[in-house]
Image (cartoon, rainbow, N blue to C red):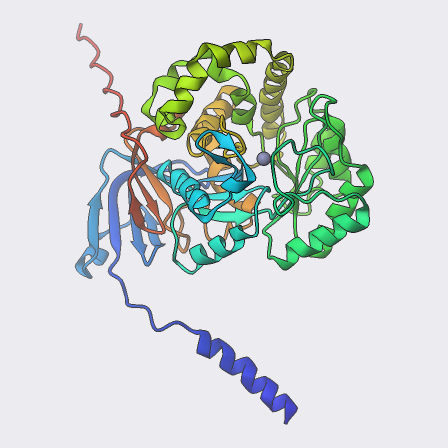
Length: 468
Ligand SMILES: [Zn+2]
């Protein structure tokens, strides 16, 4: 009797939970674009992309007529390029508001605004890698139920730091866990697992010797306990030796570049020890290293609509002002930050060439200088400046980033069955990676989203060569 009751409830519950049959929505057929599908395969010219119920039902060199005959709407994208929505494996939300940082900024309204900003720059999913309040889970649930907009959010719970120092962020006790013993760290990991965190985050850094670094036995306890709870672990690191120790202990995601020295053969072999091709993964966050000092130099791109829209006029004025420029000049850590960035640029190229799995992230949203949406495009430019091809950089920011986020089943490439998350560009990013900023439209789950700013028109076609 008891067995039967159990059997009945096991059957009845899922049936009761089934939604009403979905209205068969007519498909939308996107025609004529150059399709860069995120897999790394060569682009397909004049491709067709068919979307229904927010998913891709066909993509590539196919005949759109059968879909049109069944009532599909057609969108002409001739001359445009389509890439998958960008994915950041290292961002933050609810930390900054109006150019200032405070634990009070972690509100549904402010987190929602940041997610909308990412989306309007073509970043359709982000992993909020720590400094989250528990509010993130109800927002994530809302999104997964189809309510609430903006980039789809994945969360690393609070994140785990040290009692008085790293991370040097004004996170409340409900926002950053700061264990003093391995057992306390394990309890915190279990609590995060109970809240359904997507990944566990820890900070291992002393910021050039100015802060207390997490003890190795706590680092190891975090990784061990996370793995027991089927969770991967991402770590903020700066130094090669910390990264190696963490990798030996089983770390899954190196969440910043190694920046104190060139990576070596031992590090590469630790990065390639993985039981799958996807972990450990390495996230370079070059745009974060650059943002430490670059605004004081007023690069030309600070005058672009893309940058100014993300920053807001007040912050642009601040960064171009004498006070900020002098503060950066006087900061004794700045020469080390510049050297760190140069090292980071070399290391990501070395690692990518060696076949290490390179994901994509920026640390956008963690501080006022780290602009959601803008930084993801800047990171693509910096990866190319570091020596990756535009195609390699785009694959890091799409297919590989989706693997790191743990949801490659649904996103990262524009293939049958995946979410219809894509970006329409007026020029080819394989010609010039900064063309990712020439946004025409963003489609998120098949829904059209207007870009955050009026993008520059496509570059004029090359003048015909003079006849002789
Ligand atoms: Zn971060």
